[in-house]
Image (cartoon, rainbow, N blue to C red):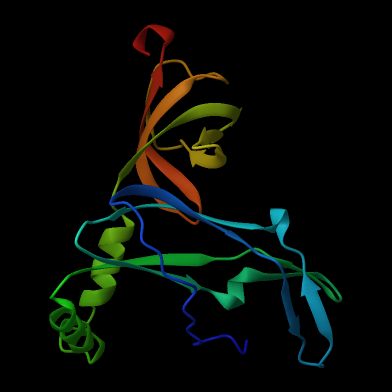
Amino acid sequence: MEVIGVEMLLGTITVDAGKYTQIRMDVTEVSGLTTDNESYTAEVPGDKLKIVRPFTVEPDGTTSLTLDFDGEKSLIRKGKGDYMFKPTVKLLIVYKEEGKQEKEKEQEQEQEQGDEPGQEQEQEQEKESEKSEFEGTIAAINGDNWTVTINGENVTVNVSEAEITGEPAEGKIVEIEGTVEDWVIIASEIEIKEPEDL
């Protein structure tokens, strides 16, 4: 719980402008102390952290990505001294055009001081609910949850409320429109691509 409220710069890099679909990180170790001062090392499934959330890097500016970890939800106790790290992360995206940093900074401070209550939260929720498009290959179908391989990574797609065009089957290519919530794509529309469509 000591990490709550702590901010750390993970790094900066120059990348090409364009659309990106996810962030992947290697997690080497998660360790801590219990309230009884007993040290532990938490299991990290796959030793990878993958955040599937499309975002756009605009030219002539800076795109800031903030990973907001929910520490209370991210650590699961399996038994005495046995923990699993299953991170719950929110990705916040801020774009600042060159020459306008100070103006945007002032606007952010006004929102934090409560001049317009709820505005920042509403903007985050609106951004979270934006629909995005994905293309991948069906790897497995398990009821309303499909496993789709997108850019070499297996992603869970919930199709319970999706309008599906075509006959789904493993190995078929799909185009998906939907939103991303907790690493799961909530599909609203799915189009199954037949061989003649490719």
